[in-house]
Length: 243
Image 1 (cartoon, rainbow, N blue to C red):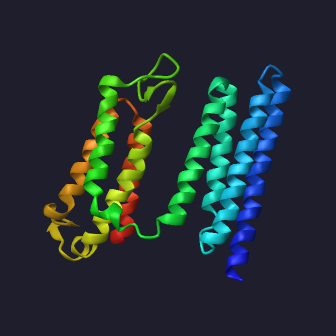
Image 2: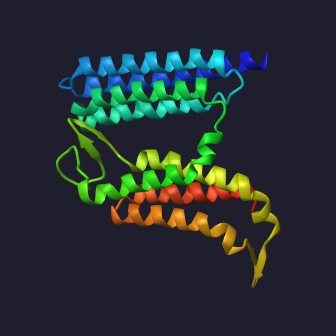
């Protein structure tokens, strides 16, 4: 019964996201007929098929899930499509292609990634790899628009922002580290004035990796991503320790 309720709620929320995308498409078409309607329709079709496939796949392989996450992702993706079509329509189909890739990877992780201990085992490798990619943009970064901050890496017309995979790698690192050190961070606290803080030996690696990521992002002047990293760090630390 619970599984059917989850699927029903998720389906209803996905329909709301689809309605939002449909209304946005109509608004763009009415306000400016010069928009490339064919590209917008194709991107919307890719959006619909991608999230419908994800919904069906999750019903089969992950019935006990949060029914909010996929619809929120669908809504934000659709919103992104509308913004790209309005501001830089030549990137719309490229974004749709990335959606296909991301949904495919997501479903592969759901199907094959039940045992994620390998992520914990190589957490420093993943994180340093992400930081190295981010640092590479300082020397070899480009901007697909030809102006502005050079936050992308790319070749042969394909571009990506290293800060995007770094977000996932940072979460993997924080989750694995906090899972191993949770009890120590809670029990072994040192009183400094009014505050009870965990020993530097335990929290130091967290602060070092987090600080390095923030420095690189600030150097790039990517302050939005830096703030997201900061609040992610605080949220995960609170979830792990309750303090």
